[in-house]
Length: 234
Image (cartoon, rainbow, N blue to C red; front, side, top):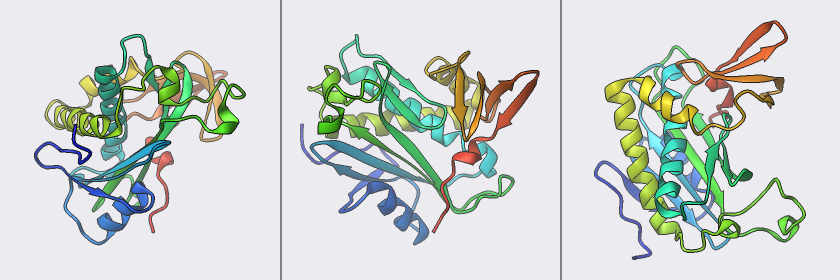
């Protein structure tokens, strides 16, 4: 496979000299078209970030975060050995065989849930090789190649992520949130367990139609909107 990734129609790539997420945000702020995938493929980790142009209010557009995460899970499911389990955390974490292996970030042009943002960037970092500190000392953290995935090359995974993410976004736009929600719920980690999300601890019940987390705190059910995960735009 060529070391230069190939992307589906409506998407194209740019190699980033620094963090891929920062590159994508910079390009979004300066007015690039949607579909740009900034990427940085390193021996120890890979980074990618997709620039999007939502046509719906931010509260609904945040579904693009789980769509991108499902896209990565599907890509790894296609390329990794069948015994490798890939799950997702509500707040963006990526889990391989139960251990943290990276995560997603999200930023938008504004933070008003009722306004349509000019742009939205979703990016991820995936650890490929374990650091010295993680070698056997932190079982809750892993790396892709430590989990039997040494044959998964970053260019191939990047291409597969783009294809599967485009498919997930297209289904979300055409069919609404239900199919994406159904698939995501089967992949998300911790449903029925006690978790801490955005500083709130409770029993994770799942998510509402906009993927906001539902936590049970005693007799109360608390909703944490997905917009709580937004990083502040420059």
